[in-house]
Image (cartoon, rainbow, N blue to C red; front, side, top):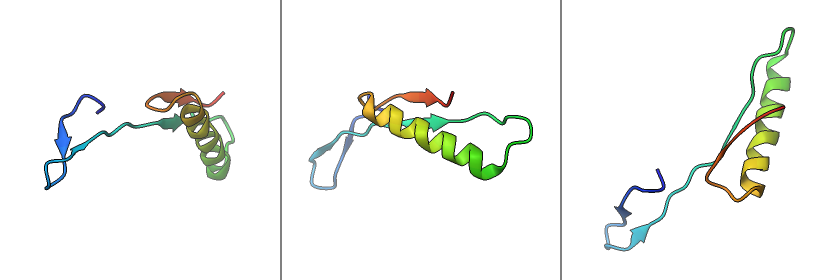
Length: 57
């Protein structure tokens, strides 16, 4: 995504990056617990410099 050449209608370039937090299902997990772990991993990715994927521990 970061290598795409995107621009506004005015011709001004746009830089796009993506950070993602992932969580796997643990036996007996409630959906809320998975979402909380994924959210924490997302913030870890952003704090680590953005433009990356982090897997919840």
